[in-house]
Image 1 (cartoon, rainbow, N blue to C red):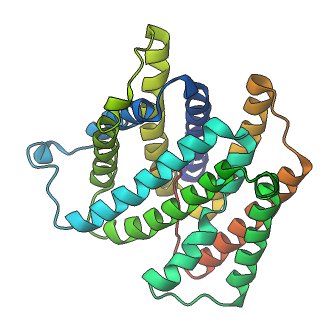
Image 2: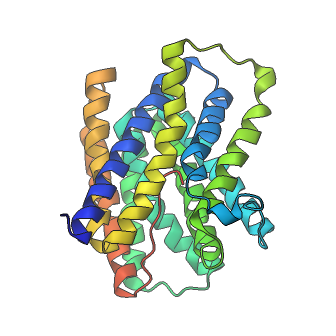
Length: 293
């Protein structure tokens, strides 16, 4: 019988694996329009969520007293999701994953203006280290004016705002309702791209595209379970395994070899986000940021 901490480690590990596989499929799907991929992320992402809705809420599960906050969360999430999809299709996998670790840096900054939190010198130094890491990773894009290096940063900005809104929503709203509204908004947005032309997938491609939504939905549920069973401080470092998976998948599937600058920058970003996280734990806030929510 596994202990609670062991269960927490297990759920975090399979969550990271699911997110990593989802990233691989998104990168592979560049033959399909982004809007079509979004449809599968939204529609199939609702499937795991439907199993969490309590039986006594099936008729009115969609009711909420905070629709405007849900709307802001969905808009920020959509911006983040589209940005990460575009980045994954146009940049090395390890580069994208490395930059996404910078999300806690932007969350720290947003918390000053949106939550009126005081950020002291310790966390400001961590933010500075993180920004240096992002610049080191993005340096090839800055010198060659490669606009795609901006998309992972936009993803971090969107995800950081999502973290703030979820912190507010979670005081009154169940996790499954927050996730449902987001997946539903993804599906609605995807319909607006139909005029651009969607491609009829083969049976194998249909299965893989469906896995984008299922993996994304399950990964977030497993992430939540991980934080439920174990101390956040114990399991969060496992999230950085995503970079190891990205390097492995990128090398064997696309022959991508991360540069020394990418690895150095990733080290700085991970160090920065880990320092911020440890500081949050010290202050008893236990803030967590899930990948695609």
